[in-house]
Image (cartoon, chains in turn purple, orange):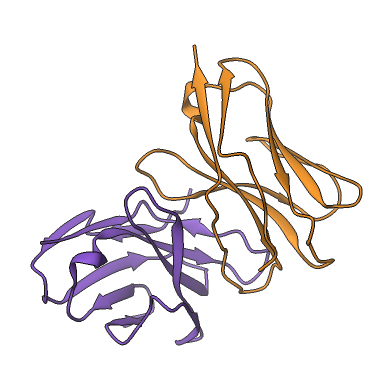
Length: 114
Length: 110
């Protein structure tokens, strides 16, 4: 069964460092998303991406965040200068153009900022 | 986004059916009712969705009230692996994002 894969599974970084989280969405999907979940809290929407541009973003997704689909298969989330409060699980998701909106999520990347 | 209301937690015995309720009194005519679940330390997982009619799949059944202001996710025989947080989410079916609430934490005991 096709699945969304994310790397790394866990990354530890120092505050102020840049981090790139990578995702390989399901191959025929064209809508891509990043969500995050701080420990013990809700799953929060960060950004959606379609046709090589951001289609929607939340207040959390400020200038420190960026997304890119560099090569037609990967979908990346970059955090330019990490803060302690960026520590969370980051989930990538993708969706096909058809259907009625089912999102397929990856297993997540745990980011720990020290 | 139209809001949903779910109980914070529910308990079930293994091998018994579980009915997880969701209220969505402000649902609009174009909103689909989606259910996702999140097992411990995993990403959310699609369970089922529907618009007006009841739906069945290999994971669960979805019963939708006639006025669509509430719905119930039915797990026919709960197993320990069904212990998770279950989210009821309204979605228009376009490219719009899913908005997760706090969901219902289901505990399954022997």
